Length: 299
Ligand code: NAD
Image (cartoon, rainbow, N blue to C red):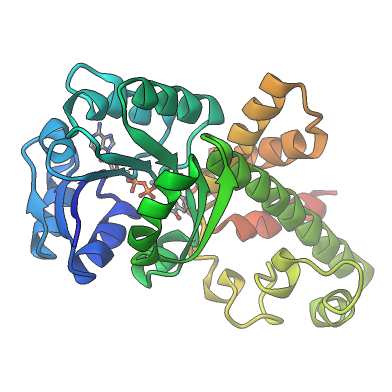
């Protein structure tokens, strides 16, 4: 069993670390929030006094932090993971961050002699709790082979995506598809309502024809057709609108940096920005349907 330092015990990190404990690993965790540290201790984890101590605690150091800024701070400082980790430790960042930060931190880790992977996830808190996350992994094959058994304790699908930063690239490209397709599906259902076509009828047609996509068939944004979708429980978040906005902005930044055309991604980001600014950030991202319906009612 591995000794693991785990930094960032929030909504995702806490259940991920708990699954590592359940699998029999020795996990030493740290979070800047006292209540996150207490919750981790209640699950049987050992709490480190600071991030540097967590980094020094294992042959593997994992992080699950909010964004690139926190990842750079936690890895690159004088007391950061790269300065404090044990020689030969495997570094594994599971946060969703910008590709540039992921590649920068991986390059600094390599200069210091560490193997590092970016391994962002999809599956949300429910996937983290049930150990059914999907990991998209960027980094060298040898590091991937070391990480795979640990990732398997937290997820079901583990996809190698190529060199450092490519896990983040896969994550934001996937969520670009998701954000745009969700809005397209919501627009279609909103138009159908205006045209007197029932949601169930549009679902019956489109889920079996060329408009079919995950946002429609598995996560339908209108109540009724897909009983398990958040639309049937008041749009309580599986994946929040604020998270979708974050990922669309990451895609936008990456598109800008690489001169890739991103017209629909930018439009989707702007719509989610308005929605989040209205105070809907905590609701599920499919609740953008309500926003589009409301806009339609205005005219
Ligand atoms: P969160 O805010 O609940 O957790 C992040 C944790 O990091 C917090 O507890 C915070 O206190 C801690 N933290 C911040 N700076 C720190 C530091 N310097 N040292 C130690 N701890 C620090 O966020 P989350 O929902 O757990 O998401 C984590 C990452 O996973 C994000 O990048 C997010 O985009 C990604 N993600 C989230 C979901 C989801 O559904 N929540 C789904 C997929 C991916």
